[in-house]
Length: 245
Image 1 (cartoon, rainbow, N blue to C red):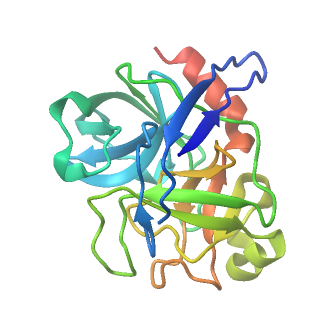
Image 2 (image 1 turned 45 degrees about the horizontal axis):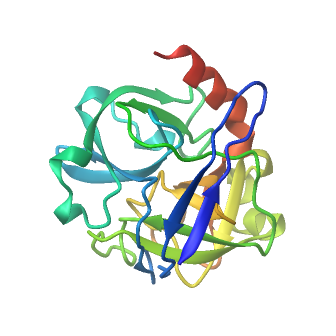
């Protein structure tokens, strides 16, 4: 049993709480193992179909990737605390009130790939000003494809990964990779399609948001998976959580 303590930091008057979350760490996504009890994990769904991952950062806010945004925001729901999406109950399906993608977000190339979803009250968890350092062991999780062009997983899967150094990130992605707002990782398992928006967790702290990778070769060694660096967007998160009611 691993006790994960998610830390809420005070930054520019953004006040966080702390909560201890207990979790088994059976690791795995591509080459992953089933995860156990991740109450902060969210499945973002359209017409009861999983389209992206996300994670709670407060009782009413979910953090995810901007490219998960759908123009019919109010038709989205989030499923909270489910391990197996086939067995989720009506009580953990929660409506989305507002979608707030970063106004400068884009794809091809990916930029500012971050979005807040305002939902009905859920549970408390975390966000952090920390960010990953090279060779640090972290984990990623989601309900995405289990191999390139493979089927998505109904069960929440988790995989251990290592933070790559900046040189390898730039070697794989060139100018698409931006140090100031991205982290890239590699491991024996990793993210694939439909894992977008899920968290990169290092030392019990969410430090990244699943953003992009090589869809023609999921978990590629040459093109490491890339995550939005949460620390780069804390002022943006604070501003939108404060003013949107």
